[in-house]
Length: 158
Length: 41
Image (cartoon, rainbow over all chains, first blue to last red; front, side):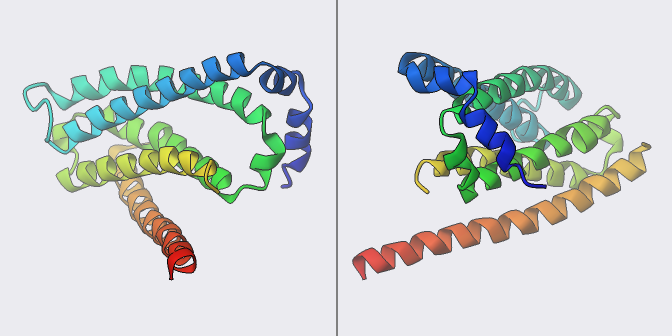
């Protein structure tokens, strides 16, 4: 499926007009994007390091996962909305950028992993889940979201 | 889905993802090293 028509449309949309014309607006939205990334990264780290039994060992992992997941959702919404706005400023440039597609692929994998596997599995009593499975999930989660952030940053240098 | 299926899915997804990410980052680091070699010999 060729997504070029979508990026072409985005490049000339009202969002693009605003993001290209008003640097201040772009900067504020970018600030929210970075804030969302740091919030999401924080929630991922706290939850996954708890699953790995590294932090907050005195708090049940079910409680930590439940609390971090709420704020993970908020951060993801902030990131996606601000990201669409920011990408409208350079939509066609992004279309031809391989790192952008690496970021989108890892973001898609991360969202699929969290909502289709990690979240449903962690609703069960963690004591009944194999420790190796928990550890593998935590490491995978950290590495996926690291890749989303790092490949996103790499867009600026490729 | 039941817990056993989800556990299998989690392990399968983790294995595929870890291999893919190891390949992806080794390619990226390879490009950086290649670029540095071209620039500085």
